[in-house]
Length: 422
Ligand SMILES: [Zn+2]
Image (cartoon, rainbow, N blue to C red; front, side, top):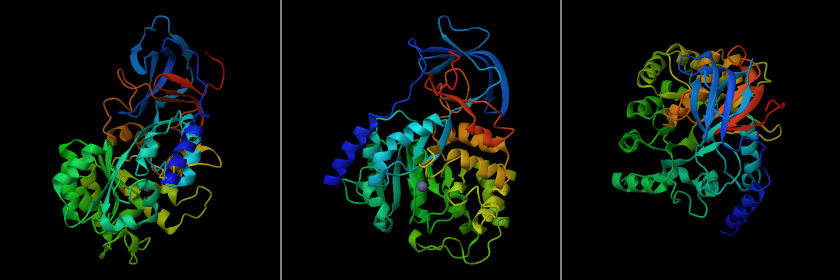
């Protein structure tokens, strides 16, 4: 309890330090001129003379400039919706509390305007006051046996592991009403299924999520439940492509902690069961979140066995038109102070050979759909939130150009203006 209180103090102290400077736009109205913007439905760049932002929203687009607005000329630049990292863990340990405000500030300036936290200490996360991406929190659901995992201890504080209002332990005594009530009172954005849940319970949990229109996402294998069990139940996003091989394995362990990293027997990534799984996912619009940069370094000239397997699997997923979302798991490279989303996208395109359009749609429009926010996020369209990134070079031609950030726009405020055009 004592160390929990200390963490809170540290967090707030640090949060005061990091703010970003942004352009002078007192009336909240900005007009972007000569804009080349990405239509994330067709994945084509389009032109518009004026893109007017007012009170954090895209007010209008066309030939007319908002009267009295600040003007920013974007001739020759490339504008896309802000990037969405659908998989981060902001607060998993004491040391995270010290560096998270600065990290959030850094990733925002690196183009990430929304993140989905995939289970951490939600109480501490709610107290973060840093300028950063919007944070969407998760309700962690796992089998009782999972909550002995040492990472859960800090994420549960000041409660016992599994007893925090943002966590639920599934046992053989699973009670539908009890689950529903705790979920409702948790005020979280979506459900994360982690480990050690049988297919029968996955079905019941997914039903509650659907009834309440709460986004539900899951590890691609939840031991003992396989990817197809999750897809059949109607989970909306499968996380970690490296957990897919279990679909082709004869034996799936009952528990997450007793699994080998990879099935012992040979599993062909193009076996018929994967064709079926991906066809089903595409048909239902279920997202796949690869998180490949977790285990693949861009500097490796020789991809590892897991990278090779995952890349082959992702190529099949792309052929079958499975929609992707882009998550990193560890949001930032603390040494370089850069968002890992750029590395994730680069590995998917340059190592796996996926199309840049698949990947960039994943990091924008699909991320928004996966969060259940497709009516307000992920598109350059009137009425949408003015969260955007402007690149110097075209990222669809070369995905590494997502690093060529000119400015970031968060809720209509301009951040990181590299030259003085206003
Ligand atoms: Zn994770």
